[in-house]
Image 1 (tube, rainbow, N blue to C red):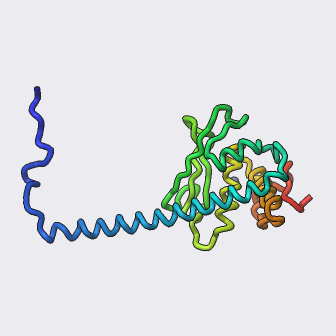
Image 2 (image 1 turned 120 degrees about the vertical axis):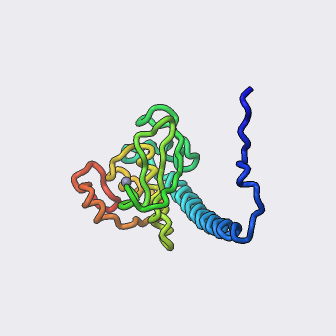
Image 3 (image 1 turned 180 degrees about the vertical axis):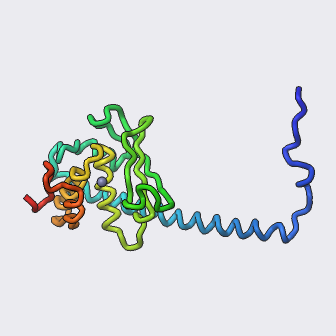
Length: 198
Ligand SMILES: [Zn+2]
């Protein structure tokens, strides 16, 4: 049998001094700070998810089985159970909520984005720093309703905006104005319509 190397090098076996402790204490404080910031984010995320589920459930009686090409039952499963089966992807897909801490890549432009197509049975919905902007409660809910369309149905921006607006309108009787983004995304000539814009 080969001799095992000692786990702790002999040089490290010495008394810990106050000087050694200072960086350790600082590091512990930083880690605690990061943990509480992340905890707040998780709270905001869960609040937004609960509110999005509530809004969708309020809208549900007014929705058909398919709205703007979105399978409503699959959408409901994706939003509420984070697991769904849709004709677009075939097999059952799990929704994984992830968080990106920096504003690089797609987070430079969006509050959240979805990595498509699903890989190895799961699709990642990434929440960006902008998602957690203080006071943006309504934006968070609308973002989750919008991104869940991408999760279930694919990359079409016009479809995602139209479906999310349909849910908002059916649940609350009003819609968040998205006309500028609608126009910028080239949706005026698309097959989709925003509520009230026929
Ligand atoms: Zn989108």
